[in-house]
Length: 153
Picture (spheres, rainbow, N blue to C red):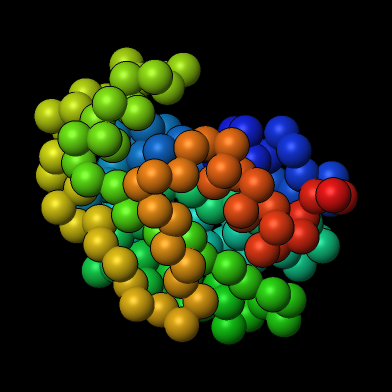
């Protein structure tokens, strides 16, 4: 979905995939691993660097509230422009099914995802908007583009 969204934007935009940062470390990062803090700082720094250069940023991933609320709050606080947060209200079974359709589905398994999914829940942040399970990829992309205005109609 994030790649589809990115393909349709018409403004200067950078897409930042949480998984990219997790898999550039040996051993892979995330979760309770020692490199989680480094990953969080790298994501925050790169988002802010792009925003300061007048790029829109699409940050995507399973950004758990416990691990990422401070990162997201720091980005929002340091960026004067508008900010949006979208939460996909999707059961694990549907998440696993969608994972199997991804281009890079072999990067991690559905079993790996189970532990991450347990931490993925609504943040209840004032900016958070809910994307229901019933939305198709096209409906989701259209909805986000309508809210954010990062593409021409």
